[in-house]
Length: 149
Image 1 (cartoon, rainbow, N blue to C red):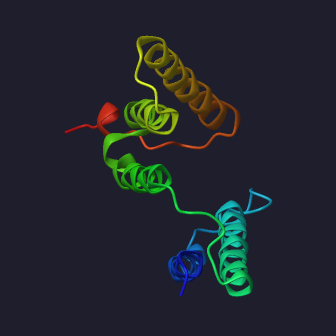
Image 2 (image 1 turned 90 degrees about the vertical axis):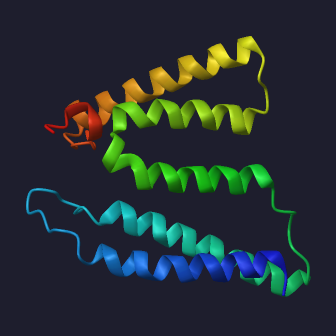
């Protein structure tokens, strides 16, 4: 069995409980699409991608491309980000995530690249926060920034 088929099957296995979880989201009357619409759409797109990997590997008998270590590192880092987001908070963790993502995926570590990554991390966080918090009225995880302990 090829790497792409294993990846597709593994992705489908992960998507099943995620899909089930979306049925437990609260129902909001004043939201036209509902809070489960976007997660279900993303899950559907990932399921289509997983099926593509399985079919492609079945037809070719070989994987489409070698899997990149940077891609796995990025997915692992994103998983850690999601796990820590509620505890640490959006405004603290997101710039760190974006900065590290730029360095991991960019592959550069010179001064100019670090300055660009820092600017992107800060502006990306501020832009996302303003859009979600002010325009869309979505409460983002506050974490340590607003903890009352």
